Amino acid sequence: MAKAAKTRARAQAPTSPTPNRRAPRKCRQCPDSPLLSECPHRFRGRRAATATPYDATQPVVAASDNALPTVAAAPEGPPLDTMEDTPAQPSDGEQQGLSSPAAPATTAGTAAPSVPATPEKRVYASDSNPIHGVIDGLGRGNEKTNNYRMARTRVLKLPYTDQATANKRFDVLSRDLVTRGEALAHRTSAWVYIAVHHPSARTSFLHFCSRKLRKEAPEEVQKIHKEVGKTMSLVKRADRVQGINYEREREEVLEKLKEAERAVAEAKAQAADTASDTAHWKAQAMQSAGSSA
Image (spheres, rainbow, N blue to C red):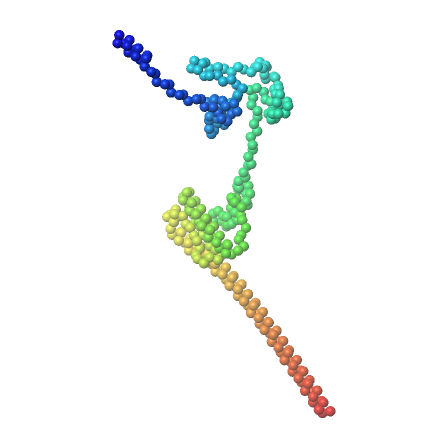
């Protein structure tokens, strides 16, 4: 009896209202407003580009838990064994010229041959193909310079015509040269010695010696410094002497020119004095002749 009363009370008790379920969302971009779950616009970014576009002509089949996967029916046409010999027929749109030009027909099972774009072949400078010429003044061993052939890796630019620009670029390029020499010695454990100087430099010559060379032959490095120092001082003095000789010859020429101009002026003054004296004596002679008459 008690169980029947409880069951009767539960049946008579008011049931709670069912919650409102959210209505299915539809796409606002497609003209037919299909369900958003069946439209490719539900994806964003790269997935939207690869999603299958919505086709309003295809019927929408509601999915169920007991539904079995269906296989799309094959389009009507000739049998598969005769497709290889059957040429492709253009569609109505292609016959009327409404569609874009079709690609060349290919047989079934074979892909269209793709012609890869041939990139431009880059030409590298080498000893057999010195496209930028060979280095001038390069040598190997104890033989004289310019006895070794090595191709340049870049174009040799024209020299600077302005002396001020040449001085500034010497500082920049020499810094780059020493930096590259240090990297060469550090990465390859090589013996490297570099010495550079400029005729217009007001300081001593710039030199670099690798750590390996300084560590293994310190006395020989000092001898190299002295010999290079003497050579640089000699060419520096020779360059200055050439400049001094040029200035001296220029000053001598200017002095001779001034002396010649001074001599010409003196000769003109003497000629003017002689002409005035001659006129004076002529006048006196004429006066004496008139008085005697």
